Figure 1: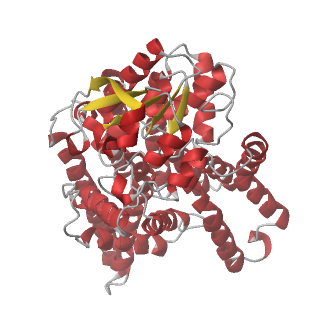
Figure 2: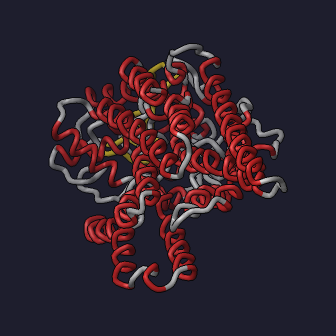
Length: 519
């Protein structure tokens, strides 16, 4: 009943709130549209660039669009809703398989399903909930001793988000641990082991073969661009961001973007849960890859130090909540077992401590969920409808339509943000961030003297003069220290049109500026 109510609330949100995808979601939409129009799996017609890092989600959108007569943003939002609900169902089933009470398992899954931040992210048309659905289904399969289906599911998760790669070494380590601990009939045969490897790596191998012959590479161009990096933020910024997210999820601490201080309480909380998870007796694969996956993501993000986008959060949250939901009660039971007393009293004590631990987990999680609905805009209004960063995509769509009315598909445009703009515009698009544009790689990161801050994108003056586009579309903040500060740019380009944003974004930028070439 608890989970059913949460499912209805989640569905109500998505069917009553407006569709407002993240700008990056439109990149995948344009790939899908081009394929459906007969242009192939490309962003720009005739240019085979592997610019999408979520091929499985792209394939799903193409199939959905082939069946349902809806626009891609609406299809993506509806699909994400289904996947979000599916994730919660598999979280519930996994926790039950781990021996946790039904009411507790349903409460954890319900909290996941109505978490305000996750609901907002799920409406953004991105792929993270396909990833979480596959991974949570794999955990349920492992908990049910269905190892082969579980490895297949994790194999497909790799084609959904690059983070899925972490499960290859983790499953390898789990297999080695299992082999060392077992003997005789309990040992997995070599043929079975090969089958597990093929099921885990098979989807990736098939895609890599196709990608190599179609695009000339197996590595997404977006990952190459981000490694330059696109956003050269200060070392340790991503780690601090993750710690604040953990504090928000576990300790009900308001998110603080300034990162002025760090409380280690949230880290101690999840570390204790990890210890409890490992100490809880479990068969093969049940007590290893979940907390190991969580800490692997934390370490990878901390070392890579990317700008932590909202859609990076659901996979971290999934691994965190499963670790905490099982680990904290497990640690409580293990601790109670170490107390010296009569066996009859010990059994009662273990039950009481376990219930108290579960109640504590649910209480902390409920406080975090509740606070999400007390933040402005309060109640059941979508927070993203007031988010300036999400709203700016509307103006970019209008900019693309304005260009279509005054140009042909043979014309080109350069921009530091190509999502909604590129989806609407029918011509060639040059991405200043390099996600789909090889020509931009030599100009990344944009020089410090051409950008306002390290965490803010920019458009390189040299790139514009290199590709010589017919139009340049940008917000003022991206061009303030580059194009708008260049006398040469003013000679060759003139401001042709502006489109006001519904709400100003970074550094007070309140309009999309469209420049046209004058020569």
